[in-house]
Image 1 (cartoon, rainbow, N blue to C red):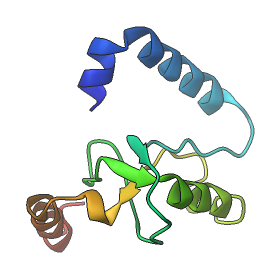
Image 2: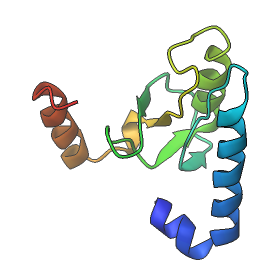
Image 3: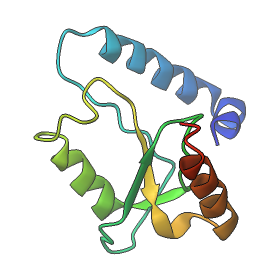
Length: 109
């Protein structure tokens, strides 16, 4: 997904990178939430959290699940000064789930 954005929306990608640099340099509490495509599905309460390049996440998340995740970050410090990527579980293929389970169960992470 990042490659597509870099290729077809280069100016937007560069803007996102610069904003992230500024936020990371601040002496404040912050969390940068990374996501792919938003959809209008109802809240599922099933949000998958990972990091780009490590744990596989899906390609979509509902606006309701995104809003709930972001509101939870006000109290939850787990992702403080981090940039997790999030998606709904339902957007993952069976192959992706099996690969991720293998990585998790192999204690690679």
